[in-house]
Image (cartoon, rainbow, N blue to C red; front, side, top):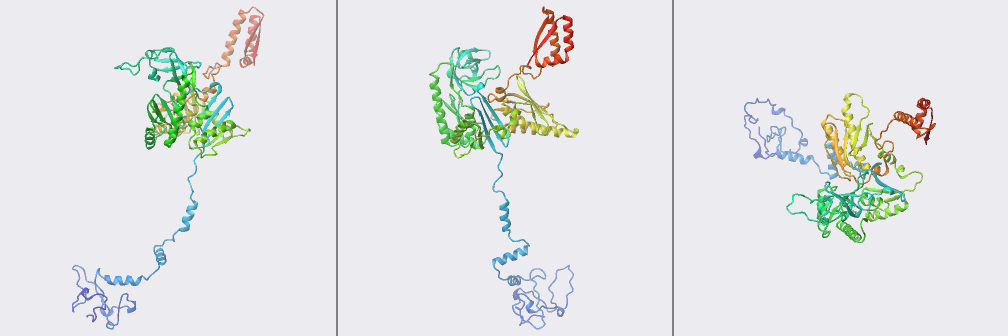
Length: 610
């Protein structure tokens, strides 16, 4: 059977497969069983209006079915027929209708325009502010000045100045060499204070050498007895405050501190503070200072607060320090030794100069006169912060009580410091070092010991670093941590201590923890601490913290009374003693006194001092 019109199928005649008169089935591949097809007469053909893509059905024979195309896969449609169907299936739609249809097909909700707007409203506009950092200055006019730095209610640093023990660190004096000790390779200099200062050989500037170093010598410094002589005048600066029986530590390598720079006359160097850790900022500051000539014979060190400063700011600070040095040199030629040449500013001025940084948001001062002085200094450093300095005028409670810092101040003078987990720190000062012992809290079960030790040691590492700053503990410090078996815990505690010590202004070096749980560190003392200024040695114990008990003292007193009664020629013995011991004798040793009176035949009268 053949079609009368080759174009009625919708496929070009050249692309239609050929068929033989004997069979209308196309040739099949070998090995596949032929499917049994229905007779042509049984094939039903859909109406012309239901056949998509049929251009015309009038030329087809009545009842003759249209032959399927064999192009592509078996039973598939031809390419032209697919394109024609696709064209008729998708009508013209507007962009909005296309988007709605696409949303329905993908089963997606409409664009969440309102939801996005609500998310923006719910989201915070900025990150939550950090803890507020404040500076506190408490003044007792003419007697005492206290300065504290607190962040988030925690006291970080505390400084104290008292009139009867004013600090002399940083002062420049015109001194006289009193004597020279060849064994110590040091000289003792009279600079006008009670005790002579200590001057080592390495702290003597070459301009004071009487004889230069011999060429070819293996020694770094010549013998001190050859470069100095008794009675020689020197310009010296106090590097370390006098402590106990030790005098002040002196140097002839002078330095003048400004707000951003430190001028070092006689040392031609340009440096940056080690507290500036960013490599890019250190490079920027060095390059900037290389373009600022400090002058012949001068050196400059950029301080930590100079981070981010401009070239003009550093240059102005340098000019001020050079004028100050010129005045010092002039005064040194006009006075006779020993004499004070330059005095460091008071504690409030030093606090603003050295400790006031950008992150300090408030300065509270409880004295009106000092508040105006601090406000004038702060306005020069931060002119945009108009309300930086605030006057505290509440007479009902002190400045420290108002902000809840008094318990932390009292803790500085305490031997023990409590930890949050129930443990405590014990500080014991000896002649050579400061010993810190860590006592654990209560534990239950052997399995909890390691966790308890690790937690307590972590808390102790933070508290110790803070107490070292508050107490200004210098020299060697030995910390006895609770023993931990896990090496990871040991490393974590060491890391925690080093991290906490990073904010310390003083130079320090932290060693590793030993197998016995001991950790050593050394720290530079910044000056006279609040402990050394406000505390003195106990007359009873002599600074040991221990004394003889009352029973032992009573027995020694009875022995002393027996000897005096034997030597006395009178009929009555009068003995004076303290209140505590006297009350103990009368309450517990009255029978022993009666026996002494009966044996000697004399009366004993005890006079108690109140």
